[in-house]
Amino acid sequence: MSDPSQLTHRPQWTALEDHRAKELQHLQPRRVEPALTEGTDVPGLDPSTAALVAAYRTLRKK
Image 1: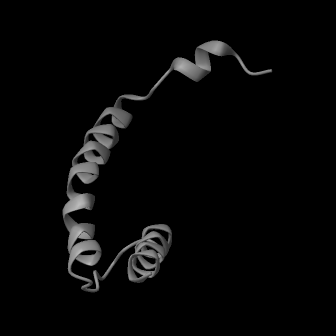
Image 2: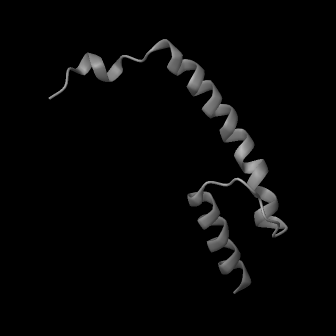
């Protein structure tokens, strides 16, 4: 079993990464919204998000 102190220890650089992740969480929906509402293609989506958009479009057509 690992040392519990290692599980809670977070390097200082991680705080910057956390901040960047929070910024991206706000930007991602703005990028995906046109794909969901207007049916436009959004370049650069990760495979998981692209699959979700495709599934949504398929369900919306029914």
